[in-house]
Length: 88
Image 1 (cartoon, rainbow, N blue to C red):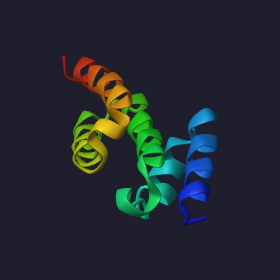
Image 2 (spheres, helix red, strand yellow):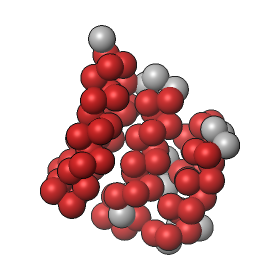
Image 3 (cartoon, one colour):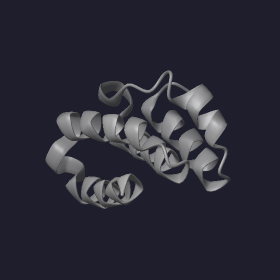
Image 4 (cartoon, one colour):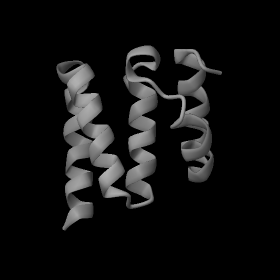
C-alpha cells in the first residue's frame, strides 16, 4: 500500500479506530511527503497529537509546512494550535 491513495486510506482507517502503534510501525517508516502527499502526513500528525507526542508532531509539522505550505495552510493552522496546546 505504498502508493499515495493506498497509504492515505490505510492511515485514515487506523486513525479512526485509534491504532496508533500500527500507524507508527507501518505508516511512519515509509511515509515520504513528496511521494505520498500531504493527507497521509496529516493523519500521522493527528496520531502524534492524540498520543501527546509534541516533539515528533512538531518535526512532522515543519516538514509538511516546508513541502506543501499554502496548499494545506488551513489544516496546518489547525494542527499548530493543537500542537501548541500540548506544549503548554
